Image (cartoon, rainbow, N blue to C red; front, side, top):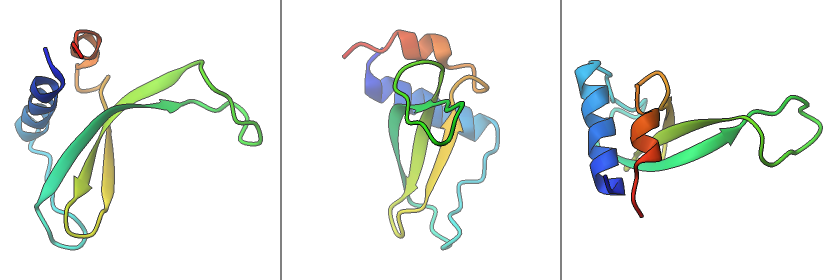
Length: 86
């Protein structure tokens, strides 16, 4: 699976869950970016790299730039994430 196929599958998952992608500004025009990793920080005063993280995708409003993140685990996409070919 390439990255575009992964993004398309992500979009289909959101559609199948009836996720309403209407931005607070009223726009329904978004782009999808990612995947990314959010590091889990045990101490907010110390920046750490590596360790536990949450893979996610970001949906970005093309009008105002509002960003909405979706964790990939609850969407059942972790195995797909492992199979992305660059």
